[in-house]
Image 1 (cartoon, rainbow, N blue to C red):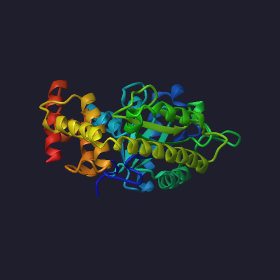
Image 2 (image 1 turned 60 degrees about the vertical axis):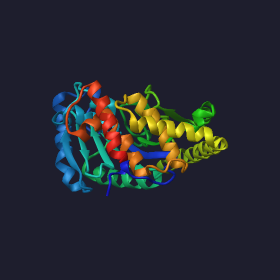
Image 3 (image 1 turned 90 degrees about the horizontal axis):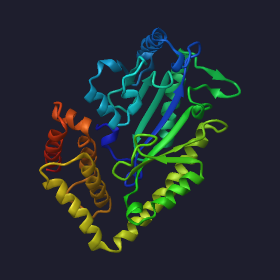
Image 4 (image 1 turned 90 degrees about the vertical axis):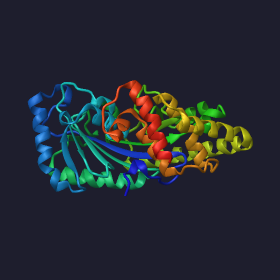
Length: 337
């Protein structure tokens, strides 16, 4: 079976993916900003020892053992954060399975960041899996926990449950109809955040936005999931309404979609930003049944393998910027055909 990021899930015309993340620290160790390199190595050794007992086909990999292209490809899949990929004083590792639906970052800003992913809107199911994983790990190590505050984290915004639930949504129609700002206000008014898919300060990537909870303390895990899910459902409804509005002028919409598809499939070279925009329009065309030349599966492959890191992994060699533009156009043709 294809990995989760190449699959479609519930509501996947709007919701690209779901993620639930738990931040944990080990009792008896300083937070990383005050943790020596020797102690960081000790944390990795302690957790590496118990990985086989966790199950799920998980494997331990030190970050320094990965090349830069592989690290970039993991960032593009959202399996590790951009900050985690950057070399600094922290001694880091990742625990991951072959399906890549479970990814645990060790020594990012907290000792442990457990993440579970799924295509589409699957927040409840992946919450159950990450809680199960958390309980297993919690039986083998002692977490830093306070009965008044909950799980203790390096950042005050994560204290309490330590849970971040997020979805990535494709909002092209709301952008085209000029209604995106209204939706952003709705999200903010309900105490959630909406930002670029690669974190705070990042730009939207192909009309993709990440919605996640702000509150982690004074609220249960189930309430966090319910809040994010409820707002996501409202946004799905708004995006689909905007798409129906665009469909009233079918000729104009078909022109947008087929122009994008034409450039995408006939170009001799494609830049990253240009490709994002074209794929955003092509995806909407496929989701609306306007474009029948390719299916959802090929759209998923195009979205992944045209990103710089995964493009280089796909072709099996390191490329400079200009070479990537040429190879990106070739890979698009290969996948489409």
